[in-house]
Length: 244
Image (tube, rainbow, N blue to C red):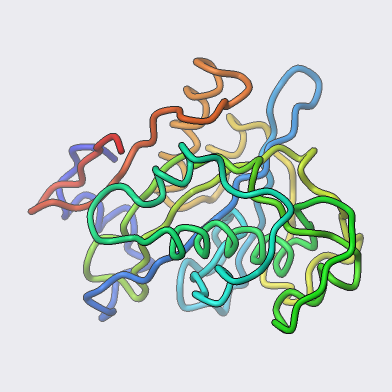
């Protein structure tokens, strides 16, 4: 998508066009990775056809950031270099906000996919959105998260988000609920090789991020902390790519 004109991006995302907010909302999504048979697979699920935003598209688990998530205790914090990437770029993102963004990705992955990322151990909180972790004895953990990319939805969409794409290996999942998450927002949860996921019915930006991830894994198969993080946004009439 880098260098594309606004009209070209609009054609790719015609399903999302509409009167929406001028200011994008913070959001987080999690790309879960699993090494299988010598290749890396990612977890994606199909959004319900009735959703106003990207209906029927395959996406990663994710959603809007809740500031209250920053106050949830964790087993391990974000790596400092990953925390720095979440606070970098346009706008002002505090350390508390960066933590909330990362925690939102973990919470949404539980709610939409029934996967609890963290470490087994006693956990308690009054926040109702995190009771699933308390019930299953999982302490949320941020230490294994890596910031893969950031993208701001162009103007003129039904919804606009400033999305941070994070990743984690499947080994970071402490509990997998066989019935899925409590919201059931995603249908057909499937693990696909990255090349196959790029060919699925995914949003244009998701295909772009999958391409970025593919190259990152070539350069560093372990996704060590501190790797380069591309940032996609509309400047003027063109969609541009920067490095945070």
